[in-house]
Length: 319
Length: 225
Image (cartoon, rainbow over all chains, first blue to last red):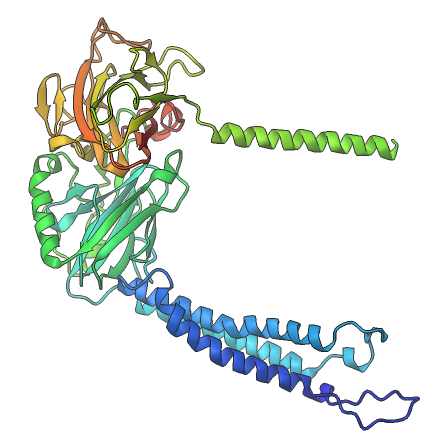
């Protein structure tokens, strides 16, 4: 492009002038470089720490980092378009001269074409590699990995928490605390959690915003998602799969608390709900609801209920 | 066809399409039930007495076989409205007359009394904190306000009783259970309530029909300042 910019614009039939066109491409590149050099670190260091979903968990922290990287990489592209348009509007704004279409300036340019293909290829492949790496190192990046997760945490102890979707509320079972079921999501800090997400009726989706966990809740499917809690705080849980009349009301608030507070809560809840827990089916990774509606309880599906989580070192309850 | 005629036809069809869209949107957004006001029947700050009943089949309207909640307005009249306006930060004394039969719960977690005073309900004069729906007449419905953590299981009546109510509103001549709880309303807001028993008999998983249409087994507590 720069060689194009260096051409003289002397008319063939007129007197030749010594006038040379400015090096427009170089100018644009310099402006672009300066703008990017300012904006990219500004965004990363000033805006980045506030980008959702925060840093409450390992997956949240990693996802925030990923979002920041994507945004920082998007800035040069965004600025490239803006600067090109702005420079063009200012430099080549409308004149009474003939429309400079066709001729040498409109011909293909091997350098530009090769550069475009090369840069975009490197960009896309780089992001694919980066995304895959992030997916692996964060054990699925907080997304549901299905019943047989490929990427599992290496922690010796993983707290399994079952998330049960039903129209229109999530409830939570704690298999390592006797399998009690609670309407409240309470988690200990500095702990690796394995969410086992399932549903008793239609498809829901468990989205714990600050935990950066999002996993579909499908009936008769154990969808596993991992994270490690790093900070205490409040968690907003929403259903993110349109699931019927009260879908909009299917939300609640969980909390990440200290380990001592969690132990106290779990122990107290276990005792308080003991009579009711006896009425629950033994803990299983999925349950089969009765399709007849008004007459049905729910039941384990009689497959080995613990196999997917045993390898993570969690103590399983005696059913 | 002349240009004028074509233009007129186009404009008429466009107007009809726009009117149809507006009608559908307004119909969808407009609550299907009225609002029953419980804010002005008693002095400010005084407890509100709220009486509702659950009926196995409403017996009238477009879906006479559907199960439903009914509410008694401050004037004593039973209405088929499920949006109830109540004052904020006020004790609500809720009496539920359960006229429907029950069954085992799909999720026994809903057999626990939660989110009300003492986590206890008074069932026919006796306090209980949970109910084993595999025993007795089972649980017919629940009254739950998820955002407030409230869940009240409503024990069913004997399905073999000869005087089961089949036409709302039901009266004392029909078999029923009476459940009483109380809770304090939070600050102003709109809080949805619903039944957690999939009681839409005849629909897949029981969650269609009256469970998936407002003004039957769900509604709103409109809490106002």
